[in-house]
Amino acid sequence: MRLRLKRIALVLVIVLSFIVSLWYLGLNGLFTAIPSSLLIIVLTNLEWVASLIASSYKFGRKVNFWFEKNAVEKRIENTIDSTSKKVNAEGVNVLPHGVDIKWVEPMERDAFLKEGKIVVCLESSYNEARNLARAMILYVAEDLIRESQRFISPQVTRAMSFAIARKLLMLDKRFDALKCLNKEFVEPEANKEPKIREYVTAMEKMDDQGYLTRILLREFSQLDARLSPALSNSDALIETESFTKLLKVFVEKKSEEDVPLLHNGRVIKADLLLVARPVMEFDISSYVKRASICFDTGVDTIYVLAWASTNIMLAKSVVKKIEETSKYAKREECVFVSSESQGRFESYLTVLMRIDR
Amino acid sequence: MSNSEILAVHQQKLEEFLRKLELWEPLTRGELKCHACGVTISLGNIGFIIPSGKEIYLCCSKVECIFKMKEFKSEHTNETET
Image (cartoon, rainbow over all chains, first blue to last red; front, top):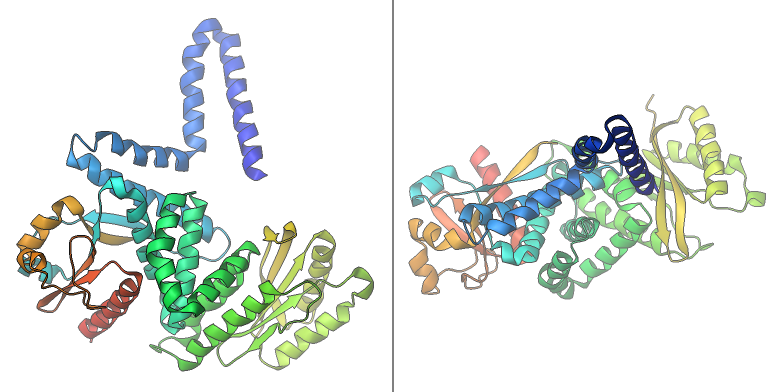
């Protein structure tokens, strides 16, 4: 919707600039209207222009190796930078860094050992999809909630790397690279460990409903702050799996089906407060009471969730009432569009954090 | 947003790069194995070149090796730091 409005506004501005230029300068106005319109298009579509520049290097790749290297480098950098920003815009900075490809020149063995840095082998720009799939999985495996990764179960880490790499490629509509990622990386791993396939499928469902970055990765991203300076934590390894399973059951549940919503472990202490009852059955005091029990049992975070406008309105009143108890404070609040089997819905999520006295 | 650096070698420069590292001959003789999974490394499956102490390891491009390589790298970094 926002994109459509932006496009309409852009067309209006361009048409207006043409009319004003022609009105003031007559036919000569075309010479000012065309460059100014181009400038407006460039300034309002910087990502698209950067992508166009990245693709333009391909034209010279047969003439000079410099173009070939840039065609590989700029495509990877551009795709990773633009898509990771979109994922971070969902609220949690899960991919905090962009990427810079630096080409290394052939060097003597001793110099390479002294440098001490790992070098990745990239293919020609004719194999762009393969390069992109490889660079993407390497980047995500490295950068995704980097500081907390050591506390997350290895199977969950792999599954979330696959799910996020797939999401990034889909955001950029790189279906060729996605196919390559699935064939060369995801499928062999999922065939070997069925649990990974199960997690990836569940995480994609979480993502459709808007909870992958906003709940699962948000919760995991806090592990470093909670557990540092420890190098690892056995409870965290177990609980990152159990919390993933809890969210898996939650996103796969049928409507009206009751499933566990509380994860009160040693490390992950979170509750999902779903406001989804019919208005006639709505009783605000039961939600406040549950928040109070959460507080008494040491729950750190309450995620208040709702779909559709009536429930969202009720959820906002629940949040307000819970805040009035001075036990939890609102940290984040967002409304977004989520996809379900029945269609697309307006969804609401508020993160309430425990107030320590 | 700060960027993390990925050092890369292009396929077209790979032979020259490996020759300088004295790894080209062993590679063509099929003597180099993936440090993570043990598969024979060739030009078709080479993924990473990893310097560690006085040794240079090669790693294939399979995903499990990417993750093992990451663990190896962080262990290596910890050892270097201590």
